[in-house]
Structure formats: C-alpha cells, structure tokens
Image (cartoon, rainbow, N blue to C red; front, side, top):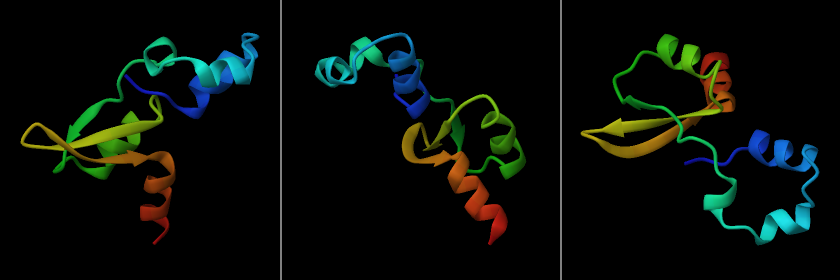
Amino acid sequence: GSISEKTMLNQILMGRNPLELSRLTVERVMDEAFPRIDEETPLTVISSILQHSPAVLVTKKGQVIGIITKADLLKEISS
C-alpha cells in the first residue's frame, strides 16, 4: 500500500481528526500501492504514470531500488 499527502488530506477533509489519524495503523489509512516500473523505463512513460499517481517505484530484477515523485521528475527535466 501507500500513503501520500493526498491520502492524509482526504482523511482530514472527510472529518477525521488529525490527532486520531496519527494513532491509526498504516493498514487502516493506506491506499493502493504505487505503480512499479523497471529501471530502464523511459522518462516519458514515467511522466505519463505520474499524471495519475503521486509516485512510482523503480525496480531492478523485481526488487524495489528507488522511488520517483512528481518533484523528482521536475528536478530532472529542469537540470
């Protein structure tokens, strides 16, 4: 699963007390897992995925080796 800013903000907007949220387990709050891509995936594909997901997990031989967020992609494009 995953937890993002959007996940937490949605919980608060639905009326959940932030203090109450901090006491919950990850299992009770998490959304679906972030998509996984191979380390050789082109940035254009990652960019497309990030339009629908806040992050992408990068894998090598099936093992997660990193995470890319929208902020990371913007930093890469602007350098």
